[in-house]
Amino acid sequence: MHRLYDAKGLRNTLDFLLKTCTQEEIDSFYKVLDSYTKLLLEQKEA
Image (cartoon, rainbow, N blue to C red; front, top):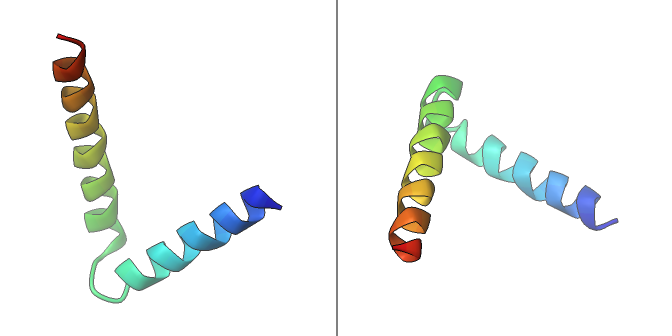
């Protein structure tokens, strides 16, 4: 049940973003966000 709720939330988020962004822009955003998260985790460990 929890996974279904998560999937619905993600779908709703993507649908909202697609109103003003292209799929390519969303993909780029998530790529940058992933890299930034890794940077923050590295700095936290140092």
